[in-house]
Image (tube, rainbow, N blue to C red; front, side):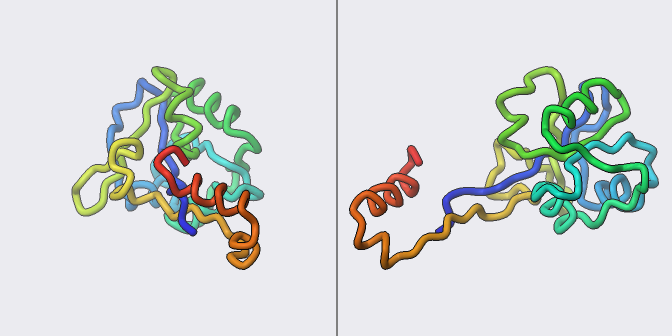
Length: 154
């Protein structure tokens, strides 16, 4: 069952002149490592890193090892005006007012914001919950929980 969307945000230091990047820009920055940015993001053991590399491509910069937690990624961007990072939208949407800038990501010359344009934002994928329907039907609490997940409050 799809219960939401897992989205990545691209963040930069507030001093950056970037406002919107395309997927091609992200390939040049993270895959080709040809743009001269300080790369920040999750380490290879992270599902966030897997998701990013599925959408953009494998990070080839040998000096990029990534970070094990989102706070370190945020510090990387806050402390370096030339840094760019990928982090889950849920992490930066509420915690980073003014400390980093969340970039829009463009597709076919249209820029989409990860907070305002959830259904069109290109770095998103469905978020699933997997359950045994037979067990859920037999268990009233499980059924109530699943119904709650599908509600607007869920």
